[in-house]
Length: 446
Image (tube, rainbow, N blue to C red; front, side):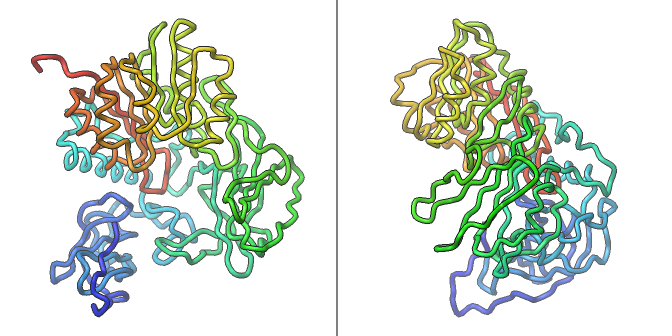
């Protein structure tokens, strides 16, 4: 959502300050307020119930709404703390949204967002969604106030004009130079990316595996730049993004890392998707399998399957008489999934977009479905197709509550209701939340 600026002659309001009372939290890491004239403000670095001075960062006098930062707190919420990170705050690093809120308050804010999206886009109350209204912390993240979980196993650093690594400021291409990212996992911090000279690079991505000692650095050079020599006292793989084709090419070491979840090891190629929180993969597999309750001999679909995380868990549970079909658009992810699931003869992985490949398979029924779509969601057409398959249960894994709520409304139109919903705080300090919804067919007469 962007502040609309349709009239090039409109007067910019950037820099204007307003004393406002902060209202409810909104989707995206900010809260809603109104200027004395009634103009809507989306305010970062604030908490509901506070009174602050808000400085406009985006918008003009023709905009439907304005974006702003709380630059001074006049009346603070009881949930406010001093941000542990020295790089958090107005105009600084944009990686975290809630450094200024107690951990419990962060989860309550996320729960409010999920509840609001469910009500507004799907017409569901928490009770109707089978949700207890809470966002659960990941295992090991129950830390005292002021301590920050080191959870981010993949960090994308930007590089400034002087070759220093940092993180992007909020909604900006400007680089906030940092010495250390507090939410970076220990294995990422050990690489010392912030201490090195990256002259000629556009970005540096650091990855630490949770199922092995694998470490990977992906370098994106500026056009014509030479790659720097990366030397460490530990095994390290180095990849580069090609200038012309945009592909990721091996420079040194393995072109993948090994991750582990649900008792299995998964190969994840450079640039491939894997859950960023070290406990996320196991947490989500457990929630999905508990919700689906697979049986021996079941047929199952794993859509947007990535490297095969849920397909592997399903295959292990449906046994030799069952069958699993995975569909994934990424070519490298499909190669990894086929490698990871090679010991299951009745698992097949197809490459392509779900909305294109699924109709071509000729599948007219399935017992179970898992879908873990990208942030935009699955969409009406795909949901309608899935609803026609008569699955006993469907597990929807969502990284965006708005997309989840929209798709749940489509599933309702297709004859499915939400049996249970669980929400997990797998991105502490940020506004992001992961949900797992379990759906089942509506009983006739209900």
